[in-house]
Image (cartoon, rainbow, N blue to C red; front, side, top):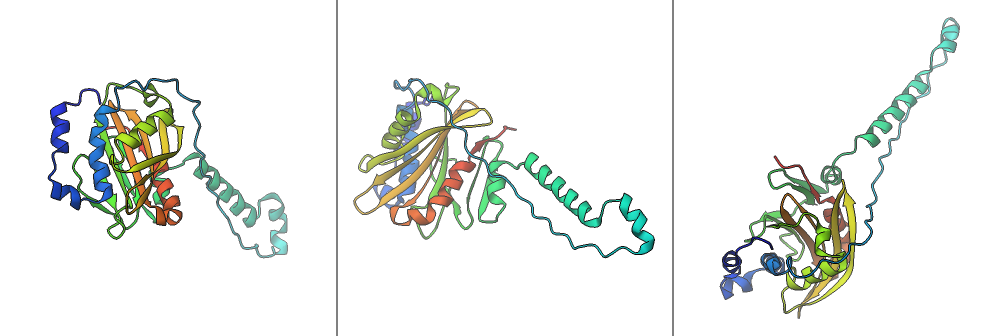
Length: 268
């Protein structure tokens, strides 16, 4: 990455053999992210594909109202000129629904609303995302934040930031080309066999993001992973999450929620 000193990169790579062997695959992947220096300055400048806007959820509001009591004879005349209690409740419910659709929460807050996810909003670093409830934060050298399942070590999410002089992720090339290089050279150890399944461009608030899916096969396991990258605030952001292939069907919806929630925030 532009402006990243080579000596700093060597310091990040200098880990004893015993420490490397004790690290989980997610930690080794995290350490590999520092090598993205070699990725972001090597001829990836191809035309970008057409942006594709991600789907948004809609909120629905169900309003129930009890039928009003039958008016007395003395109230009959007044009832003709004023709305019934049921109609007032329905009108109020419609107004609440409309307000909810107009005032949509941020992606991280929206996903965390059901209690199954925890939000992370770091305005100093300039990003937000969610992770599944129950995952714990761990410290990994070279990563800004890492959360993982303490029982399933391959289930984790990490975010990394590296300085860059680029201003847009599309400056590096199309999604499939950038994702392929990132998966092979940065997000997976060189001993693992990788396969890029899908890569696409999305747009959030006018900013381009590349989102991709891949697998990394080791001798005794295969990790099925998702990633999303973007450029903002003079930094190259990489968020990666995944799980063991044998648990992919169970975890894929939660992992997609993590990736879809990632968003650049206004720095303070």
